[in-house]
Structures are given as C-alpha cells and as structure tokens.
Image (cartoon, rainbow, N blue to C red):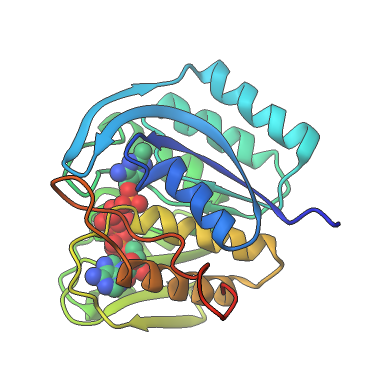
Length: 268
Ligand SMILES: Nc1ncnc2c1ncn2[C@@H]1O[C@H](COP(=O)(O)OP(=O)(O)OP(=O)(O)O)[C@@H](O)[C@H]1O
Ligand SMILES: Cc1ncc(COP(=O)(O)O)c(N)n1
C-alpha cells in the first residue's frame, strides 16, 4: 500500500485533547494523512482554561523537527502555539529550510484568555514567521495583536487582510468566527479574494476551532490541492466539527474531529 501524504504539526500539547497537537493529529487522521508532531510546549489545560504551561528547550524542538523531516519527510507543515521569541525564530529558521507549504496559525491567546505567546515574541512572528508562510490564519484578536487593525464587522476584513499580507505571507485567512451573524472568513493573496461562508452554530463547545482549521488546510495542501481548494475543504470540515461539538468537563467542550468518519460519505 502507498503511504498517505505526511503532515507535520509544530505546536503545543493540550492535555484536554481539544486544541493544540491533539486537535491537529485528530484532524489529520480524519482527513486521511499521516500526522506527525514537534511539541513546543506542554500545557495543563481543560474545558475551564489553561492551568499551566511549560516550554520545551530549543534543542528539543530542533531535534524533533530534524528527526521527522530528515527521515520521513513532509508534504506540509502547520504551526500553532510557539510560546516564546526564541521558539518562533527557531521554527521560522527550520521552516525556511524545508521545501513544503507552511500553514501558520499565529496562536496568541486561548479561548479562555490565557496567553500562549509572550508579548516579546510578536515582533519575531511579524518579521521571521509571517514572511515564510504559505497561508497564515489569524483570528480577529490576533489580527489586532499583529497589525493594530481592529475588526468590528465584515467590512473591516479586507483592511485586516491587507495589513497581515504586508508582512509577506502568500495568503491570509482572516477568521471571522468571533463576529456576529454568519461564520465568514476571508481568504486572499492580495489579488484573488474568496469569501468562505458557513452557518453560525449556536454551540459553545468550540474549543480547538482555530487549530482544526489550520491543520485541515495543511492536510489538504499535502494531498496536492491548491490553497483556495484546501481552505474551502478545511472550512467545510471545521464547520461540521463545530456543529457536532460536545460538552466535556464544566466549561467549553471540544469540536468533534471524528464527525465525518462515521458517515456514509467519505471525509472532505
Ligand atoms: N459558532 C460558529 N459556527 C460556525 N463556524 C464557526 C463558529 N465559530 C467559529 N467558526 C469558524 O471556525 C473557524 C475558526 O475560527 P475562530 O475565529 O473560532 O478561530 P480561533 O479564534 O483561532 O479559535 P479559538 O477561538 O478556538 O481560539 C473559522 O472558519 C470560523 O469562521
Ligand atoms: C496548546 C494550545 N494550542 C492552541 C490553542 C488555541 O486553540 P484554538 O484552536 O481554539 O485556537 C490552545 N488552547 N492550546
């Protein structure tokens, strides 16, 4: 049997299994690729928030990355929580030397408001990581953190996208999940524009949406899809996962990464 496409996530561990590395690997399984991981930080996390976070040493991140890339190889890489300026710069250097598309989810703050990136790392994200990204997927808070642009309605999304593209990524997806009304995202490379619309589900169990979308994009790119095709398929996958999100613990439960697996139709 032929090996499936290989996708690497470089991100933090979420002990509760809803976001981070755990969400990434579940998404990859659901979408039919071989998922691999470089763990940057370990969080003690559940449905109520982040109770603790510990970064891994730079050498541990570098060694994991080399182990995977030098032997197994990758067809796409996704990055998530990178915690510190030192880790952001290390990962940017590693990605820069890898011939595979890079999906950068510039994770700043968890859904509960816990910081997952040091303020001192923002400049490294802007100047080292964004310029080498194939696709960058900020949510509205991350857009403001990175560019100063505030998004209050759909009409601000174009301006937000232009401000992120000024740092040099090829494509940006501005995630409008936190706006009211439809769940609308804007994908653009500065010339083509794709508006991705989905019904907004009134479901509070949305832990892991951002990680899931970015991993799904990376999985679809690894299968050979174009960026617009990959983002459209990933939006469809995350929308289904949000619709099927379930309660777990006393707070915000996870999306259901397996929603498409037990159906008659194959996953997107
Ligand atoms: N209630 C919802 N119903 C449908 N789609 C949603 C909903 N909330 C978010 N989305 C979609 O989920 C994807 C992730 O967007 P979101 O803005 O939630 O990312 P995020 O902020 O990085 O995630 P998180 O808030 O978990 O950190 C986007 O495609 C967004 O439109
Ligand atoms: C380790 C880790 N990484 C990322 C997130 C953000 O999650 P989301 O996918 O909801 O944006 C998180 N809560 N924990």
